[in-house]
Length: 135
Length: 426
Image (cartoon, rainbow over all chains, first blue to last red; front, side, top):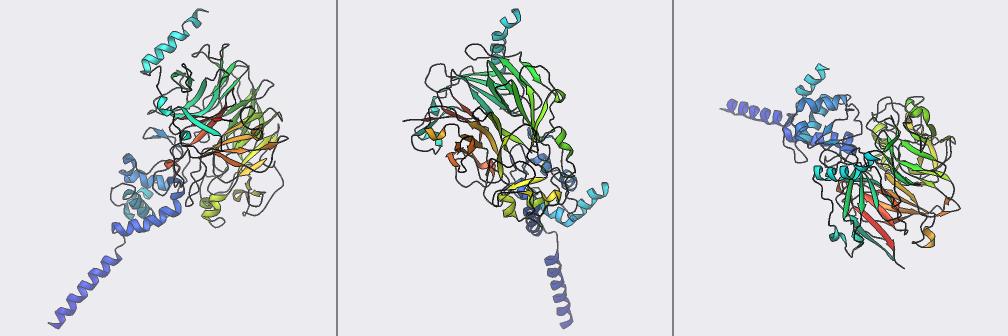
């Protein structure tokens, strides 16, 4: 009986330990992502993700927010194309951020996709790695 | 002669085709709160037009009619090069809006019977009749063509001297001429290859058609991007307002704090003489120590200074984005304003996490052709609130300035397309 109790306790403890360590629960990823965003993204895309008219695009355009691969690619490679986003062109170049880790990119995109009125789910480390592998 | 005959007809048909009302009732714009602006005592303001879209630079004719240079996108109400605004019934408010042309852009100027306007690659001019109205709206002369537009700092602002020359800003398609634009740690290209065709002011003839780079002169270099510029008829020299570089912290986080990045470098006014070099991208101006500092992309550390390159005539706080410059030569305003400079500050986007700043019109007193060193906010309240976190929160953003024949000051707003008229009442 005692043995069962210890085993059960061990299982429960392990379960909660694993849960606590779970790096990609959305809330934790969002929290970490906000730190990455504040450091690398906020000065251009602004605290509310709304961007700057004619200069830096808002991070609320569904066509982009819903396309994980496109977002990962933009973070990795930057963006210098002058393409219209929601009929408006934006003229500042975005530098590549391929020096960020897969975890940082997953976190910051998870933050963006779950902030500013967006509700588009998480981006995983594996998804970032997959885009990185494609080159 | 025959083809000119049809021009008015064409204009009318454009109006009909575009479904634009030939007249707009804007009487509702008369308010007793100075159109929401805060002004020095005895000045008042009204909105003479509203809802024009991205109203960039403006000019006012001796008859009091206004030409507005427009920028636009697919969603804009007016997808026109220029709007010609007339107050037909004399109540002070615009009631007729005539659209002209279809090229987006910023620059507009009026001189000796011609109206000049720019796209982001070309400069056009239109002959005016004795009432200073465009004679052939659909047939401007193309005087300058093929100017560089790489989608960054692309606006081509213009001003004219009294000797038949036109000065065109060609902004640099870069922040600081890094090998990789805006990338952390990326160093500057030596020499900066952008400067051969951008990052300066080019001079052309006002009356020669189809001029390209080879017909013009690079009048001044080392200017990252100039939107506001004006010919000072008292000193007979060109004055320009430079948009200073961005993102010292983002690019060199070990060297600059976010606060330093928000407060550096200064936005500078330069008096320009032929051949001048203002130093971009190699330097920036620090308005706290009043020195030219070597840019970190070119081996600077935020402290190393240089005596190369011209000094600013006066420096303003960082990132305020001066979009309009006008030397006041009118007789309506009090004596202190005569020959001084008004500057329309569009307002900053890159002072985060500090609040954004600007969104006002400043006055710089001049004495003997030089700024006295003190400047003051002349018209404030365009933004509609005092603390602006993101420039998107500003209701209106000052962009262009013009002086009326009666000495009134006109200000354009390129967020909602409002045109303000500011007058002095003795």
